[in-house]
Amino acid sequence: MRPDVLNLYRFYESGLGRAVAPVIAEKMQRLLASQTDPVTVGFGFALPYLDFLGSAEAETGARYLAMMPAQQGVCHWPSHKGTRTTLVEEYHLPLPDSSVDRLVLAHALEHANRPVHLLREVWRVLAPGGQVVIMVPNRMRSWSAYEGTPFGHGRPYSKGQLYQLLGDHMLSPDGWNTALMMPPFVRPMAARMLRFGEKPIGLLGKNLGGALLVSARKQMYNAIPKSAKRAAIMPALTRS
Image (cartoon, rainbow, N blue to C red):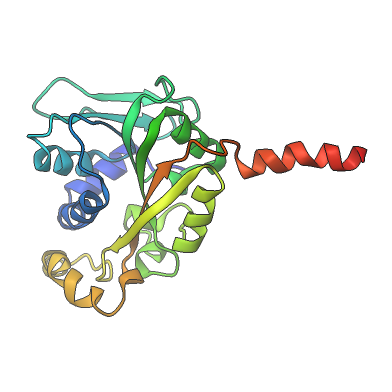
C-alpha cells in the first residue's frame, strides 16, 4: 500500500525530513550525469530532491517535471511558480517514447505491486542512453525497519537485488551509493547530527546507509527483456 501524499509531505516538512532530503539529494546529484538542457522527470515523491537539483543545476537549463501515482495523490510544486506536478497511472506514464533524458524515482519502486511493469515504462520513456536514478530503502538497515519514516514502508532492496532487476529489464546499472548512515532517531539533536554522521560512518562501509541509490542507463541493444525472452522460448521448447 502506497503512503498518502500528505504523510510524505509532512515528513519532509518535519525536522528529520529537512535533514534527510539534502543528505540524499547530494549523493543523488553525484550519480546524475551533467547535461545541457536535460529533461528530468521525478516519479513517486521526488519533490525535495527536484528542489535541490533545480537549485544546483540552475545554469544548465535543466527542465523538471514531477509525476505522482494516482494511488498516492498529488500536491502543488514548486511553491513559487506555476505547478509542474501531475497525477498519473504509474504503469502508463503520459509521456512519448524516448522523450526523457533523466528519471528520478523516489518512494516509488518499493511500493509498486508490479515493479516489472514500472521498469518497462521507465525504459520506454527514457531517451537512448538516458539515465534513471532510483532511491529505495536499503534492506537489512535500521531505516527500513522503522515505520516512523517513509523508508520503513514498502519492499526494501539490496544492491544485488536491484542490480539484477534493472539488468533484466534493459537498464544497465552504472553506479550506486547509500545515504542516511546514522539510525533514524527523531530527537531534534539527532536530526541535526544526521548530516555530520555521513562521512565518518561511511568510511566503515559504503553500504551502511539506510537509503540505497542506484543509477542505470537505457540499453538499446538486445532490446527484449529477459522475462519476455523466456516467455517466447518456452512454447518453442514445448513444441520441439
